[in-house]
Image (cartoon, rainbow, N blue to C red; front, top):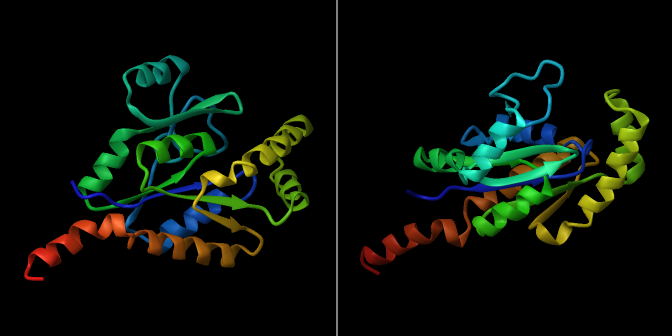
Length: 203
């Protein structure tokens, strides 16, 4: 089974990483979004199987014990996990996989798949991040303060990542993310088998 790109996108809550991922998916149809399993409640008009696979704690724990997750993490009191089958099925069909996950999951994926490309999305400043969190009108003041504190911790994990994108001007950030994805499809690791075939054809 030929390997494809594993593109990991992380960033603090409210930084806009999901919007960036949505824009990239529209521009690059070869990419499949990894739909995580989670124990958190649904929000608004989220659809099971599209936004997330919503499961209870017991189901998630059983999947974890059976080693069905390529990565899993606890974030803000809820569990999230990516099934290994998502990656295998995408690669079997010649597709790439995009992950919109927490840095804990990114670390696990990088350990398991060293060739994965990890991108950290950062706000231009913390004041902008706070404005975006408040503009969502979904969280209490206590939750907003928790998310801001968590953001500093998450941004401090930058050494884990291959690239860092400042999401100040959205269109510029989308352009950078798309360029990173395109470059990731042409790494030496992914092209090695093809180059070896060229060499074996008469070089």
